[in-house]
Length: 124
Image (cartoon, rainbow, N blue to C red; front, side, top):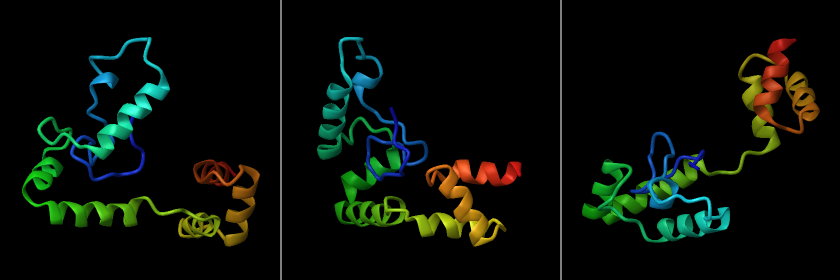
């Protein structure tokens, strides 16, 4: 389990999305359910543990400058967690050198999955 969307949190790698949560590593047992993992993750997101960080830079900021931490976290939400519209996907493919019509047709064929549309366009 990891984050695909970048997040500014002491217990989540700002580079890879890896999560520092004991039940995902050394405390994992087959008896744990996805529900248990998600509840534990929700608790970690609500109550960071900066003394056991995944990302030392984020943890240091959390401990020493909460205002800057909150500003940076908010900036990352705006930058990385915004909703991507179908028009955004078309525009991104157009920026790769395809026409808007080609982009839209390819996206429609693959249920608007951007990576699949680009692969289809590149394969010809």
